[in-house]
Length: 158
Image (cartoon, rainbow, N blue to C red; front, side, top):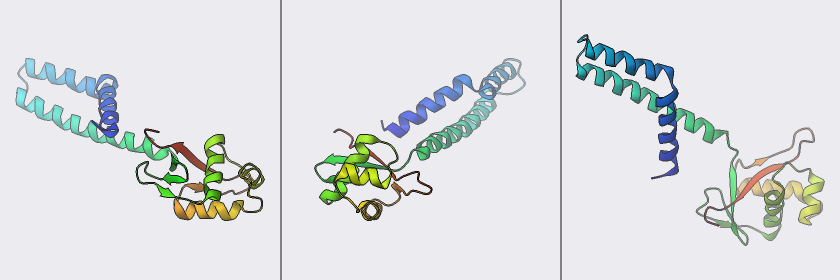
């Protein structure tokens, strides 16, 4: 089973156990069926409808949490990196050194810090643009001295 399916199952399980609306509807349907107000088939239909709505809400919740994570560049070793953790591309030694700095520090860095730690003085802005071209949307560029940021993680299974 995929991680998405596991996340969805966990979210649904949490909703079924903790959502007051779900608990109230189940209780109400049990009473309605036992007193003969509605048929069992009608109760099952209403429960399925609520379950589908809760499943949609759970899916939206999982997607919202996932989209809150910043874009990631995955390190496959050597000079190989990817955005999906599966299909790496080879980058220059300079770009690999800059990405290694972000992997090690995992924080926003000023131009001077990137240049000092990577060993490429005067080239940080150019290298950051190069990273953004190779991995679109992964570089947060500085505004008012808040620094550059790139999220770099080891590739899955590494």
